Amino acid sequence: MHDIILKTEDVGVIYDGSIVALENVSLNVPTGRLTAILGPSGCGKTTLLKVIAGLIEPSTGTVKIRDKETIGPGPDRALVFQDFALLPWATVLQNVAFGLRAQGVSKREREKTSLHYIKEVGLSGFEDKYPHQLSGGMRQRTGLARALTVNSEILLMDEPFSAVDEQMRRKLQEDLLKLLKIENKTVIFVTHSIEEAVYLADQVVILSGRPGSISEIVYPEINRLGEIDLIRRQPRYIELVDEIWSSLKSYVE
Picture 1 (cartoon, helix red, strand yellow):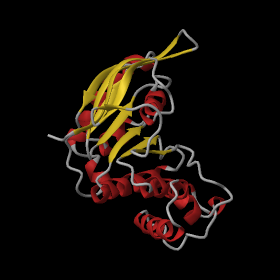
Picture 2 (cartoon, helix red, strand yellow):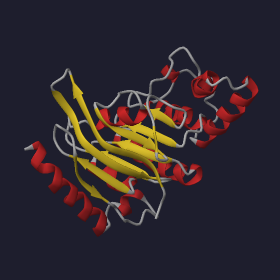
Picture 3 (cartoon, rainbow, N blue to C red):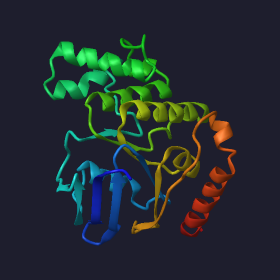
């Protein structure tokens, strides 16, 4: 059993007084594990992530970290955005160090920490490059390194690999799993890909169509050792993908 680091309790979000985006979302997120949030378009996946991040205040319910109610953003959570959200006028090193600078960390210390994570994500040698000089995969690695530098316990990732091609997506998925073993972070990962959720996650939270509520939680227990292509041929992997698709199919027909 893993300790629960984060809980949402009966979280609901209502926009403009009448549009119900989320309804009664109660979720336990275990420490040091990856939780994927999956569901049809418009079901509130990103809204839920923003509630957890403290960027949207829930209309009902609470978010608790280590059993303490949290309101607004905090240093215990870091966001990795779908569109990278890099500063175009800043180098890779400056982008990665940005969060530490905001925290008032000394220049020497933030450079040391940033260079460590730049190496961890495989970008050594690109410290002085600007975002426009990087591939999509490199920009996403830069965003991930920036999130890791601030040493938050919880990484919140909003479809982080959707803007890169399939080959780079698979490489980034493998790299993320390796990094998580080293860093022991808790990750909440929004995706629209069933295959990605099953490959990466320890628990897959399936949201219903709007208003988004939890329809099912699946726990993929697959052997992730070896090549990704071999893993995706495992009978259990294929079975889980089919099972989740069966759950989601009714919301997209």
